[in-house]
Image (cartoon, rainbow, N blue to C red):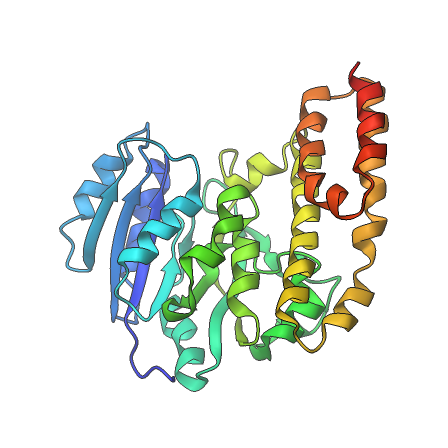
Length: 330
């Protein structure tokens, strides 16, 4: 159904972002759209985050505080906790190292008011460094897929969005830029992969959430996606983890294709034809083995090899590859 003046639940999952917290929270509480509640969360931070959070816990917009005594080590566990207690029709996961424009909610809520089929809306993001200086835009994330589409606002059929963009990479690079409908979230079905993949669970969640619905995009850069040494994405692309991260994404592509086949959307065959790279990218696996043989980063590559288990079993090539691995590590 179309939403007239929906309540938005803002979930704020924090871990050790003391120095960014105040800017993040002020950017939330100063929104021009006023119908929202805030859930403050902390995953047992070891810095002074709780001192900052406690200053805001009595704010009129704060309806819940969930401060863990034991660290879960997985931000998606925090998402799930927040969604379960959310009262709003819409959900915004406002990550604590990011911040936003005061018009963020006002503009992101509008697509839901216009079209009852919109299940997720997101905006363009600025690239921001540790000091809060804007260094660019995340439009570069989509330049090679479509140079013109993301320059303007749009509402698109979700299956087309998957086929042309989301199947190739996560074109929604930051959760802080996203608002989605709570009633369409199935905790049990949508977060099974999110728990497994610490770096790419958001991609899988979006994929499952939007199938057979609509996605809205706001081209204004209303979100500031901060890049710093301790951010999730920074950790993922450090030299020793880069190949692991790339191949987790590779396995996810395989899972996405399997999910498309299962739900039998009308354009599955077309998507499958355009994504035969799943088989071609198996070459990456072979190259990793060669790198291991040359003595480079054995531990990191050994971690990477484990992500292929599903693929190997499905294509009956596990025995051949395991034989190669045995030669490398014995």
